Amino acid sequence: MSSIAADFARALDPAAIFRAAGMEADPWQAGVLRSDHPRQLLLCSRQSGKSTTVAGLAVHSALYDPGLVLIFAPAQRQSTELFKKVAAFYRSLEDVPEPLRVTETRMELPNGSRIIALPGSEATTRGFSAPRLILVDEASRTEDALYGALRPMLATTSTQADQGRMVCLTTPWGKRGWFYEAWQHGGEVWQRTKITARQCPRIAPDWLEEERRLVGDFIFRQEYLCEFVDTEEQLFASELIERAVRHAGGPLWS
Image (cartoon, rainbow, N blue to C red):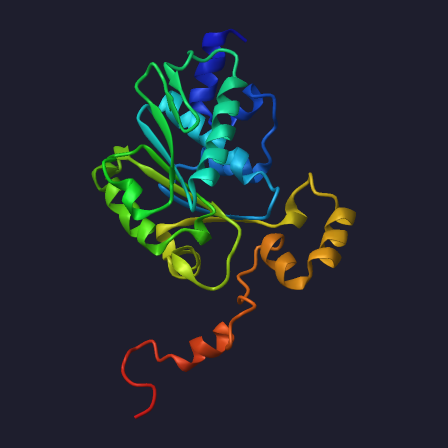
């Protein structure tokens, strides 16, 4: 296939970018890449391939939907690690333009696209507007204030013809925070993808069973089975608290 034909095929099918990078996407990865839903939540096990998935998504967006791609995580080190995967994914493609500029946290392409990695605090969002794609890594551990600051950034790209996207990926971290609320109660605003370690073909069942014995039930359920389990330091279980709350408002006892 000629480079022009291959480029056209990638533009039409985002999942084809995996094959161009020498990989084969799992069915769920291809589904995430091909989805046109503007808001996605990825609740995925450790080592399931979620970072590689969004790295491919970032590269495809930068190449074929030119604009700003922002990467957030709880700390700069974490967002930089995801950016490194994005940069490595880009370098694995043979027939793409040479970037105009590449640093540890930023890549600029000839078509005007920029990919920038930032720490996940409300203050870091200032000065950016109308991104084509926002990625939030370790989303369950990012501040609620970050989510509140990110949503207005998409206000001018929220029409059907000019749709900015937000994709949030994480393992669970207890029954708390904006990601948990969005996953449990966010309704149709979000498209949800959940992949446990047992659904990942690259994780051997024997290794997984050994890991369960080594790390214990709490960590295993959270990190590999993607369950929102209560934190070990909680005095009362979340289920008890939720049953004690009258969601319609008003006092608990009258």
